[in-house]
Structure formats: C-alpha cells, structure tokens
Length: 71
Image (cartoon, rainbow, N blue to C red; front, side, top):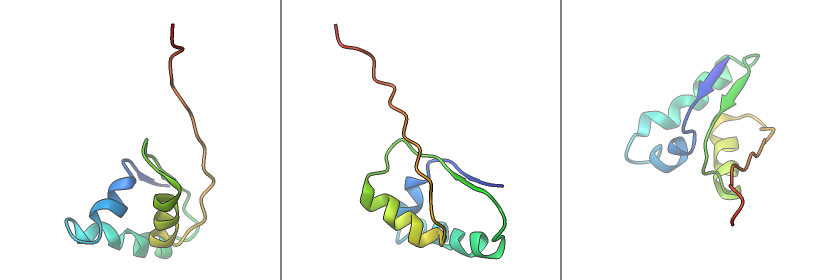
C-alpha cells in the first residue's frame, strides 16, 4: 500500500517548489499492484485530474463532509 497524506501538495508543490514530489508517479508505476490511498481535504475536480495524471492511476473518490448543522 502506498499512502499519500495531503495529496494536494503533490500537485500544488510538485512542479516548482518541491519537484521531487512529481516523481511519486514513478513509484506508483513501478508498484502497479499496490493500493494507493491519497488523502486530502482540498481536492477540487481540476486537482483530482492532475493527481490522476501525476500518479498514473484511476481514483475512486470518496467524499465526506463534516459540516456541523447551523443553529
């Protein structure tokens, strides 16, 4: 299993600030049978598309909203 916490950082930082983050796709390609768990609280559709391309995998997106009811 490959676990990526704060996965949005791969996209946001992987192109210039932390270029080695963009290399994680080589790891996921090498370990093709590994399950990838990418966690983030901030993944709009364009970021999901970017992560899919960077990691060379197709995601099953699970959304959980922890909003408290307004009183």
